[in-house]
Structures are given as structure tokens and as C-alpha cells.
Image (cartoon, rainbow, N blue to C red; front, side, top):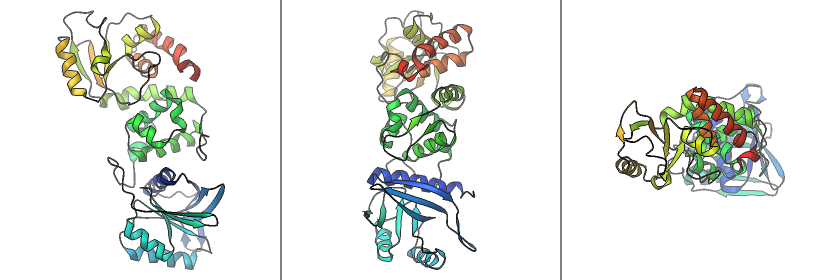
Amino acid sequence: MPLFNDKELATLLRAFEALHRTTGITGHRIEGEPIIAQGFRADARVEIEANGQRYPYLAEIKRVDRFATLRDIKAQYALHGQGEQPLLVAPRITTETAEKCRELDLQFIDATGNAYLHGPGLYVLVKGQRPIEGEELQLTDQEGKRAGTATHLRVVFGLLCKPELLNAPYRNIVQAAGVALGTIGWVFFDLNGRGITTGGKGKGDRVMLERQKLIQEWVTNYPIKLRPKLNPRRFRAPKADWWKDLDITRYGGQWGAEVAAEKLTGYLRPHALTIYLHKHQGQKNLTKLVAENRLRPDVKGDIEILDAFWDFKDERPMPETVPPLLAYADLLATLDPRNLEAAKLIHDQYLATPEAQA
């Protein structure tokens, strides 16, 4: 099956996401670049699912910067479309362009949530939607679409730590993972394509099929692809046991790696300390943590402080430790035999089954 290029696919996926966000209606890609008539291809064959019905369209995916483009699409499909309904899919349709589409009866969806759709039992008109703050209006999100990238890892971490996010609204996943909205569709597209998840066509029907495979993939990629981007800093303390009675949550922090293992399993006596600080008042909390505990910067120090990359409350199993998945990954990455044993305990107690994590 021919595939359209990455830019077009990115635009289509983001438009489907935005359509679902603003209207609850779902879009599906059925075929890439179908041949409609000799010498004429559509960009994709798609279906819009609403009110229990499916409406077929031929998608024309492009940026619209002049009204003449709209007339050209209508004329092209009138001549070659074999009576099938065209659907314009664009990064953004302005209010003025939306009105022109309505005049020409050219149906459309865009990546910001604007839409004009109609058919038997269907009428949708949304206009005036703008890009979400912080989300770039680009046609591609190369970072988000590939498994193992930092963005992908952020999203997967949320899905593994908070299974309820699997079928949550995309906005909830964005909040938890700290990524752009357009990334979420790419991640699910990848996970579904590789058979790790399935579903997603209806509300609440997405299922995790290969959880353990995804966990192992995540812990393999995290130390290389995401961890180095978390602003790691090293310090040393005047006393080795300075941390034992410390409430790290006072500084917006959580214990990772060896301290997390000691608290989660009671097995390990920590030699190195890992702290993840959350971004809210992060610099202020870091300054306070360093000053109150007389920590000194030292590139070879046994205290490592990193920026937390997730944003969800997880009181399980205890609020002062990072989620078990992250402790597991950090312990494995050390290759220290003591830590590998502790990592296995964490896996068996907290990660072996979804129920163990709950």
C-alpha cells in the first residue's frame, strides 16, 4: 500500500486528534494514496465516525494559503473524484477560510480543531480554534513519532505508571507527560502499529497487550535518550547520613534509584543518592535543598539531582519515592550487582503485573 509522506501523515493524525478533542468525533485512515482515476491519486481514504455511522471521504492534505486552493480542490475532485466526497485536511483553517469552504461546500478538518462536516444525520461546524499554547503549528513532529525518543519515553512513562491514562483524554496525557498535544497520536500510532496496544477507535477501548515488553523497552532507552536531558547535577554532603531523616517532599523532590529501592523493598543500603526535583519552583527548591543541607557541587559527588519529567500525583507506594518504574530503570543502568538484585525485587513487587503496581 503506498504511503503518503511524513508531513501529510502528521497533519492527518493531528487533525483526527483535534476533531475528537473538540467534537468527540473519531477519524480513521483506511488507505494511503488510493488511485481514484487514471493519473489521479487522493492523499488518503478516510472515514469519519459519528453517531454510530461511518462517513467515507477522500482526503486532500495540504496547507491553504489562498482561496484559489479551495476552488482548485473542488474542481479537481469534481473532475476525477468518481463521485466520492473530498475532505480538506490542513494544519489550520482560519475563520475566513472556513467561511469560504462553507460557501464552496468543501468539507474540512484541521489540526487545531476546526471542522466543517455534513452528511445524513451529521452536521458539524467549528471555527475560530487556535493552536494550543506551547504547541507549534508544524506539519511534523519527528521527535514524537519515533519509539525511543525523549518525547515518546515521557508519554510511555505516564501510560505505564498510570494505566488509567491509556483511555484518558489527550489533554490529561499532555499534562502528565509534559509534551505537545500533537505527540500523543504519534505515540499511540506507533504502539498500535507494533502490537503493544490495540483499540482506540471508540471511547475506552484501548488495551495494553504487551506491557512487559514496553517496560523493558522503556528501561533500555531511558538512560540513553531521556535521562541526559534532565539537567543532571552532582553534589557532596558533609555527612554520609544527612538524608536519612530528611523529608525530601518539602523541596518538591522524590528519591530515586538506591534510596527508592531501600524504601520500597527494605533490601538495599544506599551508597549513592538520586533526587528528582519537580519543576514547580524547581530552582528555588534546589537552592533551598543545597543551602539547608550544606551540599557542595562536586562532579564526582555521590548525590545526583535531576529534573523530574512527569507531572502526576502518585502516592503509591509512597510519596517520597519516584514511581517504581523509574527506580527500576535507574538501578539497572548502574550495572552494579547490588542494584541489579534490588531492581529485580522492585520489578517483582511493583511491575510484574498491573495489579502489583496499583
